[in-house]
Image (cartoon, rainbow, N blue to C red; front, side, top):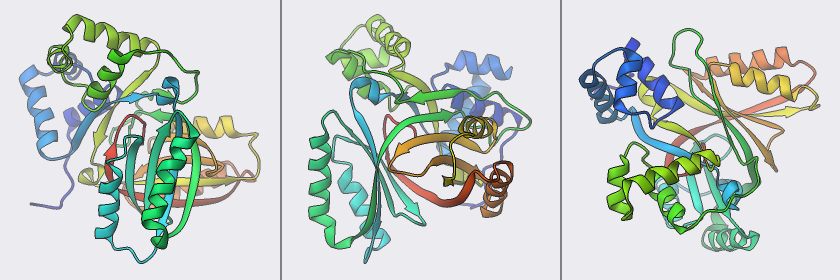
Length: 322
């Protein structure tokens, strides 16, 4: 198989743009939006999937609205091979409270995103992890991970495209029942399943499933829909950039710069992390460094330093934005 990047044409770009705004869009709407037949549109979607460009269609679930604290742990290991790191990631998948696991390059080796309704649950998970791996843990960073501002990605588009913002972790908890929970667990990892398919799995009527999903959307518990993309297949790489600031008085302006930037798709606020954290998708390191230099120039006197590191593999991706 060729290592050459997957080549996108006009219709591919339109489809990816539409799906990253709303990964649950039906075939009829997609076909109408790109002004092609349903058969043509379905063929393009299946090709994306078979080539591994599209990996999943997910809902962004605001777990903070469901009463969870959301945390991120960065870990750097010593005396640990890549194979051993993969085994650690597989081991962590068994923990119900762990939502996302990412293997990284650079400053950190592993990012773990987890949540719990009681802080003692976090202690239990972390203490058990340290008990198993303490001798190999060189350093770690523990952060409260919210709120998160996720934008639809436009790095693959031509010209200026509208960007929307999906907000996670900014509001108070909402009440849901057991049926809602079942729907969230089944629906969030694959939002392109029909209500009929969901009804058979959940043993509810299609009308009930559809009504409850709409209610979860109205409450902003489901706060958006996004596309799982293997950006490496498109010839891109993702970086996280941590900005150290001397002042916060231009944060609103910095946020707007990031929201409108074609290569930036997320801003996250943390307690325990960097002053200002962004997610960037670029062709190569040179393009990343040019973006960082532009930020430093535009916000001279505000941005003291910038550190960057990259993501390699998502071993698990549930609920929260990446």
